[in-house]
Amino acid sequence: MRSISPPRARLAPTTLCAALAAISVTVAACSASGSAASPSAHPSHSTASATAQPASGAAAVAAVRANWGTFFNGAVPVPRRLTLLQDGQQFASFVRSQAKTTIGALVLQAAARVSAVTLKPPGRASVTYTILLSGKPLEKNLHGTAVYSGGRWLVAVTTFCALLHLAYGKKNRVIPAVCGG
Image (cartoon, rainbow, N blue to C red; front, side):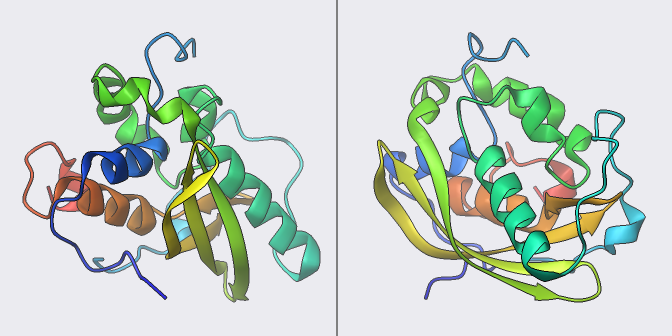
């Protein structure tokens, strides 16, 4: 199985598109590895639903799967997707700037399929997933983390940053400072 935690060399444009699917959509659709931070240190956003998601059991696994699917769905507006990313507002300007690139037009077709979720108390889950482009696997068996914060399961900053490093390469100036860019 492939892990995205270690930074990798710059990838082909189609892989870059898939990785960007996690973070951006086109402007028209936008009408709207380091150490992991503690989930409790990252408050939820004001747009969070009033109902808390379960922290354990089968319902928690289902919530992780559902939120992961929404976050990696290029048809979902950026503001909604950022609410599913730990500290998502830190990345808002980066995501919006990348949505203006030519690659942004391709990411509307991308998605993720979760194949496994393993809860790891307290407040963490390991997620194995595949990035799909036009319904076809592009990157298989990637490993990420979900964190339970503010009563919701969120895609961990470490996972998002690992995807950015995978897409852009370790030392690219485009990567936000919070990811070591």
